[in-house]
Amino acid sequence: MRSLTPVIKRLGGAGHVPHWILLLDFVRVQALCCLFAFLVVGLLALTDALPLAAWGVARADLMLVSVLAVQATLLLTRFETWREVAALLLFHLLGFALEVFKVNQGSWSYDAAGLSVVGGVPLYAGFMYASVGSYMAQAWRRLELFIGRPPPFAVQAGLAGAAYLNFFTHHFGPDLRWLIAGLIALAYARSWVDFSLRGERLRMPLLLGFGLIGLAVYAAENLGTLLGAWVYPHQADGWALVDWGKWLAWTLMVIVAFLIVSSLKRIEARLDASA
Image (cartoon, rainbow, N blue to C red; front, side, top):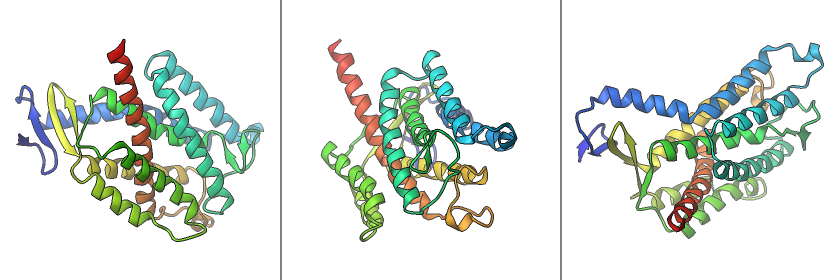
């Protein structure tokens, strides 16, 4: 096993691919995996730039129609599979339920104009969560992911469930996110993820992957607030950086997405084996 970086190891393969070629290919594949997320952010930018008020069009409604069209296109072009979309729908619903609760707690707010706004939250908001699941499903397939030494499923489900429920319960009791994060770190401390690039098998710590995805979503959230998709209380008088604590919050949501997508892939493997 050779080191590609201090945390990424080369396991096997041709072994002659230069590091910089692997890096460029990794960026290319990551961009493909992020296509749905890129399109959602692009639509946010477009709807922010267009004079929708002058046209009498609600941003929430145009966004919903647009993201549904994007989702349908990705299905018709087989970029995503029906099984993947079914799993993403679950994450969509979990995300939307969280959004409605948080908005009504005053954690952040949306423009409430439009026919597609429910409980103060535009229906397209769930697709922003689904885009995280979409990235994970795409990465699993395109990079041929293999998870080594994962915690027992019951432990993973318990931790993911605790992380999700804490987003609700900390409004009425103690905030346990750091305790849950510590337990997650212990549970996944020996876990890794193997992936393929140009015939090479590479390995990195799974916790690092969770943190990097959480950081990417945190960056996207800053862009989303900059484009006026939603507003935190401290941004009422003008845009400001989203609190860095949201990085941890998104990393915990990544754990939830990971559980959903990994469960889907486990079911798919069983179905393929019995076919």
